[in-house]
Image (cartoon, rainbow, N blue to C red; front, side, top):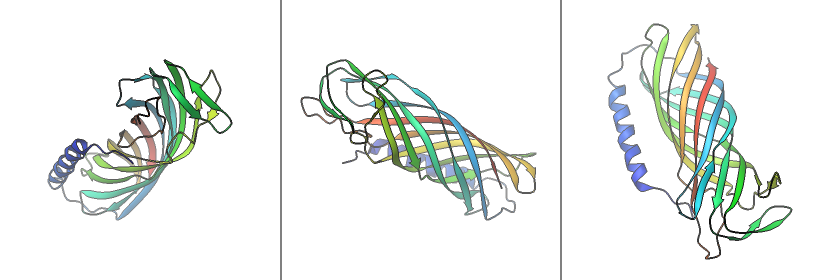
Length: 233
């Protein structure tokens, strides 16, 4: 069962409300009803365990790409939808022994203090509320907040040195996160704009199924920071 941090959701509700209040103070101008584009993004990801028996050892540098679209709701706000593909992961150190890790081709029994390096790929289906300013010169500023279902595409790990095992049996097929983003668009000609954006994605649900000898189910969430650059029309 997925565990959702209710205190985080309350804080995010306050953020959404604040975003709406700010948005209604934005200047009025004619807006296109729909826009869309593509982006590429270097990113850094890491795990955040909720148990002292697991330590996050290293983050992972990787990349992602996707498409993004805005459906105008008002002059200041739009519904932001997208389809993203990103690589993520990091290394975890398990201070307790692990009775069984099931890879597709092998089953491992891990001693205490084992380190596993995860290399994951996800498809993201983000849904956001986006508030933006009118253009100041050629630049428009925006903030967005939303929810991201994450569909596991591939799950590999170095359980032993460079083993590159397929560990889809130990990584959940679906995970959930919220995201917060901010950035600018720079007008080129007509409706064509450059996009520059920073996005923080914070996990809400456990991404793995691994248990220790005491049969305790750990919760490991995935955090990701992206720097996106793209073009919208």
